[in-house]
Length: 549
Image (cartoon, rainbow, N blue to C red):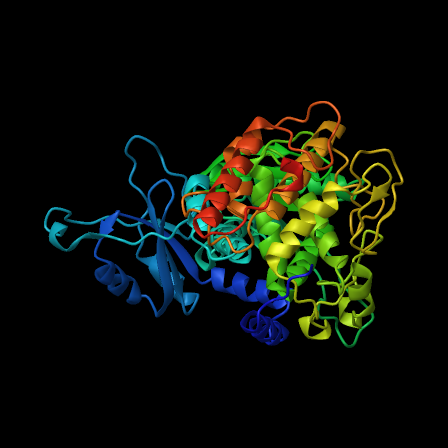
């Protein structure tokens, strides 16, 4: 039976739809944040400091729009000025480090170090500053927090609130890109370095890597042509046999610059023979692990597409965050390359599932393409990456299913999906015959000949299917009100995240509705006992699940 959202929740959805209609486009948000980052500095400062005096000192150089503190190999302050000239003013009074044990490379950046002239005399008014979090809550604390929610739907939103990128963390990501842009501009003055992927697509988790894109496309574009005369000028430039070789040469040089001149950059690796060449490094001042690429515009379009889907309905992001967290808790996904399902594949599976609802919660990619205007047309390396970028053009869904229904149905749907013959395709929003024999086939939404889950082997897919069936069964057995369950006993989403469940192994033939491990049996028995005791105390009959008879 389909559960509907209560009236107050329905009103909230309608309100969210109106707000969404007024949201800026992905490109507008990117442009604003890039400009904001260019007016921002990063200052390493003492852990205890008079915040009032600190701001007063900096305000001599210009008006401060915002600031916050965080910890990463020391305490740092992110300070956004109203004008870029304020940064030049601050740089004018900043000295270079003295030669003590090591010689400093004299590259002036927007990363500074603040020290107290007389620490002993200023100790009385120094207090620890409030530092904003840069990492997610530990899983045990998360489970406890989820147990205090009043519904499974609330649990999913609570998890999303704990895991999603904060406003401060997003600003820091754009600042890190802007700092790398400062280095790149030594060779390419008109270039832009911008984040893509999880950092900007609304599905980013605190602590996720920072993907950077070195954009050189604006260099030499739209030059002012003389209105009269018989001549025009063009630059003489180095010629190479292919765009890939040009990309490798550019990243090689920029990688050397980051390694030799970038303050706080460590462990620089130039991975130039990969399918998409990149430079990987750790940016210690911000705490980010970074991958810098160029000539990767399909990935930029993928980021925007996910931004569109994540902005259409709050349930999309809540379900994606919860499924990803569940997958990580059970070892279905991994931080190292291998045969595991990736977060991107899981996101595509959730989007596909939401397209299959009645009515659909999100539109197919083909539908978004039909709603695109002339300004939305994008062909990248022969791939059609066209879709509507204006959220006003996309009609909000009339689907009012709650997240507890969607979570259970997600597990049930993919626990019984015909992976042996069908593929997943968010462009069409329907199952299609697999074009190859890979255990899991998820079509790349833009590079349509590619399978984004080609790495997944049969064993990992079977683990996913078995766990999905078990989790659907757990959710179905619980008392939907949970009021009878002890606050200390994990229920709903919290029960699905228990570390003991991650010990489960797929052994022998799969059982469609069975429980494949003693650990999961103990969880279910505990849930039943708690529920039964409460029902007995209330004088009610105790129902016995059919699978437990």
